[in-house]
Length: 181
Image (cartoon, rainbow, N blue to C red; front, side, top):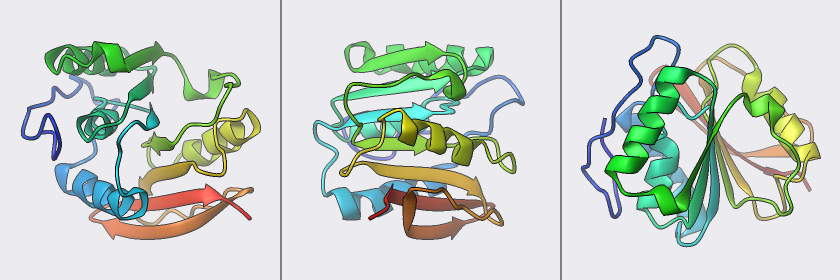
């Protein structure tokens, strides 16, 4: 697995030595970031969260493309080791924060983020539950973009959020969401 574009383009990423995580395939990441770039224009100076982070590939891709900072949240030990190794290898410590624990234990924030990336285990509904919680805790504002990866056959419905776009890529479905009007 490699960083697709930006400052660290082509750099290899370590993946967790565990069956508990399923890293987002390069092709799926490329599609996702193309979808986001067409809407955001630039990733420069964005505040990003990579939730259910796995290897941290999604957040590191955002940082490589110019995001100012990224919060990585993961609870699986092997995945946390991979995230920390990838951050160290790319010298991204100053722009990264790693929180060990469940996304479901995150508390309120002072200001909404610009981009929230979620890649929860397929078929669990964990992404919808997490987004419902984050919405209530102030993580999602008028300008926030949300990218949720689910299994291709999963339906995404989250009260308070509207779907901007959906795209199937192999076994995955990428859904971009915004705050509902």
